[in-house]
Image (tube, helix red, strand yellow):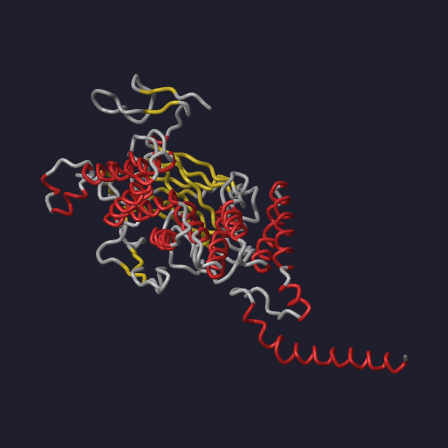
Length: 501
């Protein structure tokens, strides 16, 4: 009996030694080939027992449990607690699409100040999470689409980026048909009108075939009619705005809506009423409601050459703790009755607006790009702003025209090696105005202290304080049916009261 026990112990010891040699010599050396493509946030190799758990799907199971827990934090409004879980879950289970898409939305949209302004310092991390997602899941459309949506909707700038990501989503066979249409909108904002028109024709042809194959399916009928309506609307606008005439070379001979560019006569006054409280008043010579001028307050010496934006695509990986010394506020100034007025109170959010001593000067920027204007404004301004101007603040240099060449494809038909090119000629037509404030002025210190009574006040060209006198907020000036539109100022017989919701 003792001999058998010794033999058994010897066999177990031999197996243990053999197992150790196998782990060290083979498994531990070669396991990385089975690792997710992006584990850049974890530098430690898995131990052999962790490899075994991984083979049995333990990591995916754990990621699912953590994500259920994260949902509870969502419901409780504890958004900060969700961030590390998003990061960890995508590392444990790099193929769970919902975690990427929900995480990108959460990071880009859910961190706000007391006035519901997003903390845009998180946007680069949301885009970095999307890049991690597409590296690990290159054959599904959703993460490409979510990345494009952040560029198109949240950033609403650098439109060539939205085109690139939507195009990548468009190439994946699992894309929902209705989501293909948004690529045409991105083409329009990026100035690629011919591509937008051609895409509508292609989508209509596909939708018509689907309808012919199954006309009883309501979704087929709805999709075909929606695309046809989008196509017809774009053709009408290309005609009325003179785009086709410009291509033919006879624009000057027609009475097109965009002829004789309209001077928007932007003007603004900026004052620091108290520490971290900035008031802006201004004018905008466009009567129809629908204009929103972008306001940005940011560190002047931030390491970027971008005006009126951040380096959104500048992070190589997900960083859930943005710089606590960076100040970046973005808001929209709603224009009503040809003027706007807004008080920006940053005292309640010292974490978002630290005005750190690391920075001595700050920019207050005003930016407007007609490419993202609503259609009734674009009917006068044009797709690309050819029908608008500003004698003082029109700029064609701070936003270049870029396009991605995505003609090269791999064996699956996906884009490879996209090449970014800058179009020749002038850049995008935008309004841009900026003032510089010192940290002492923002914080009302030193000679600018509240006790001293010296108020930081900056006025643009053409500003007339009489044009921004306060009026009843429930009154809108509207164009008269006959004669001239009412002048900005006191209510007239052509004003219409608007009830509060």
